[in-house]
Image 1 (cartoon, rainbow, N blue to C red):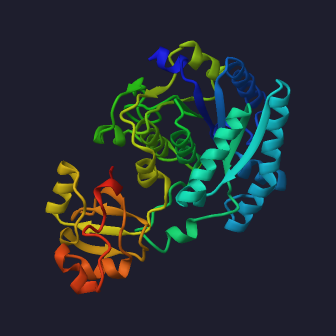
Image 2 (tube, rainbow, N blue to C red):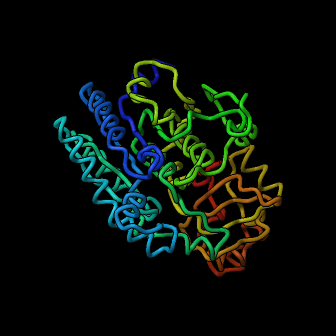
Image 3 (cartoon, rainbow, N blue to C red):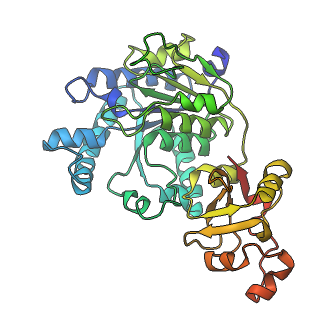
Length: 378
């Protein structure tokens, strides 16, 4: 495992809000510059480094003297003010070591739109080839929260920087994602309530027991252990490894790559093809298709296409080519896929045999509502 970490060539490092701030809510310059110094050592070893950082909203709120939770408009103003401060700090720090930096601000559309997704990949790879360290943050001046409250079937591909870092790592085929927060790693119980809770040093697979270990979001941040586990799942299914560690430990980055045991390491579980990664994690999910038990069994056990006859119900307005959730009769999402028909036509052919599609619609694109090549099991 130490060799796996030591030999990682392309590395994404994610810094959480709480790890960038001191006890007064101000930026911890000594900690940030310590991170930059550790990263410069990796850079000079020939490692390819991408940074995903939080902190813009908090910095802006401190500068403007406001509470960023007052309203969406205040939050956006804080982000606009704080982002320049945040980037200035990284640029100044890396400049001391002769390292070029590039700022990239992303929204969910940069991933959900397939064309933009591929373009982003080209941009990031070009910056890596030019020797620049990309400093990435979510563009908090654009929000999807208003969308989420209208459609329970709509899932945004990311709403926090843990998931953003995972999507970046997945898209770039990164060997390792390091998530630095104010927690020591994944515990087998809540350490704040149980003093005998132990850190789980290595995770080889995800199961229901592991999911229960996730705790709620920490104060000041937007994520928590639940979002970190979701991020780890994305990366490990893409062939990479993940480390969750405490960024407040001095020289934590150097210690991780020197082989010192720190935090929780998640090992790769599989390597989904690029398009299936996009379907599973990187795009917005715009509707639901509820299927019967027979259809679920065929998809899960036989990797079959989803035929209209196995569909019980469709929900939300989606277009042909959108990604939707595939849900069983208990309401559990077990797969995602790209639909071959729009919502109104999918609703008409739900429960209909494929040879009756043309009679029902007057045309037929495919026998399947979703073909097996465009289905990803979750």
